[in-house]
Image 1 (cartoon, one colour):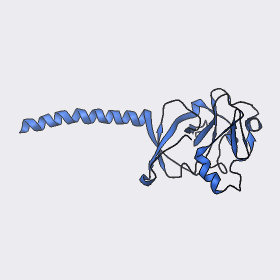
Image 2 (cartoon, helix red, strand yellow):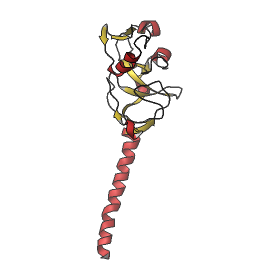
Image 3 (cartoon, rainbow, N blue to C red):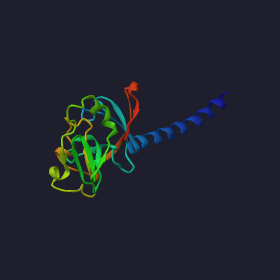
Image 4 (cartoon, rainbow, N blue to C red):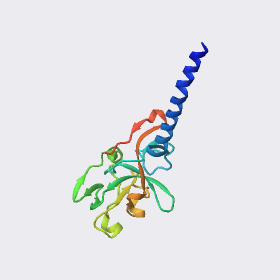
Length: 182
């Protein structure tokens, strides 16, 4: 009987050790938790929700990204403009490279209050003085366009400032959801 107990421990100790190392690796380098602070991403994300952030992969239009600014402030915003894009808002509609692009993630909010402008008119040229988003940079906006501090305020974001992209809201449990790109 004592020999069987020894075999069990001999089996479980390395297994627990390897599982712990794998979990620490994933937690440190691949997927990290983040608590949302503020309401600039509503209705997609709400203050005090917790999300998982993927620290790798290609950034695509409408990804929700985490940005670590040079002043050490951290923002969570949605990528609207990719390198080389021209962009503008007119009559609550997004135009990228001259074509109207639907923002399905805002459809419900705009429909609720269709008598008021949700995103004020602007062009990239008016905000930054440039016709195109510079190479290696992104134009980002918060989903709560009326109150968000984003590229309209601080300009385009260097790709090196993007530390990951939010993929899942896991807390509170009743609000578990995948964070959609569009």
